[in-house]
Image (tube, rainbow, N blue to C red):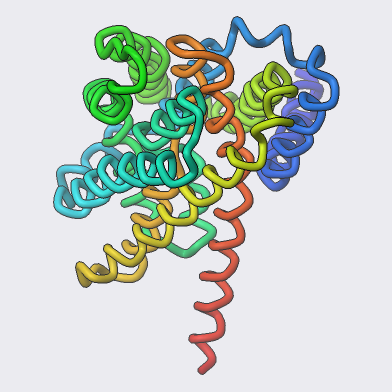
Amino acid sequence: MTNEPIGLWRIIWKFTKFSENYFAVLVVLGSIAGFLHPPIFSWAMPYISLFLGIIMFGMGMTLKVSDFEAILERPIDVVFGTLLQFTLMPILALVVSYLLSLPPEIAIGVILLGACPGGTASNVITYLAKGDVALSVAITSFSTLIAPLLTPLIVLWSAGHWINVSTISIFVSIVQIVAIPVFMGIFINNLLGKKIDHIRQILPLISVFAIVIIVGAIIGANAEKIVFSGIVVILAVIIHNILGLLLGYTISKMAKIDEKKVRAISIEVGVQNSGLAVALATIHFSPLAAVPGALFSVWHNITGPILANYWSKKDKKDKYV
């Protein structure tokens, strides 16, 4: 028996840790590369859904049955966070779209973003922010499971007057892109357990590169349009994200919830599954409608770590006061 496989896994693991530590930087670099030279990622446009399915499968591979038991153990916290996410973010998306007088295609993209469940990045950000990670995972899991029902209805309610929305086709897409891969991942994870530890450890690396490819492809496909409408789109994404984080925190505080839970809920509300928004926009609307989701993938990986760093330092400061 040789040491080659062990050495290979060690190298891959180091690349994985690098991708996790510099995730935001890699996404930004991918965006710039796609913008400056679209052909780098243009080949990936027909496979956006496939890449997102791989990311969702990876998410499923990190979940256990016990993660869903947490939903039953603390239903009030999970339902409160999920309800806040599926009401506050869609309303903010509508308000931002009207206040900035966004063109219909871009407005649809922002609304899609607001109607999506929480993103998996929220769990990592919650951990860094010293928040309630178990609650974050429970809300992400629950919101993802009910997204096939809620997301199409929210999009129909929010954007039906702008453009024809087929709730059935969006439902089918979410089931295919999100639900099936997640359940497959959960099944395999619980079936094989520790036997696939090596594979599970490198899944973040695969997910990071899949996200970089998705974002780079969308930015590249809309490079010219971004030049003309880029400022307003970026502004819409920034406002949507910051207000989501801020109001998620404020409303949770007003409900007299524990600080760790408040942080988890705030991050869950403000960090959306932007990859799903990109895939749905590409399939059902237009590449331009996918731009807000692609930009959000970059932006929330900037604000999230900044907020987490602030909370972490605040805890250390309070500890010695």
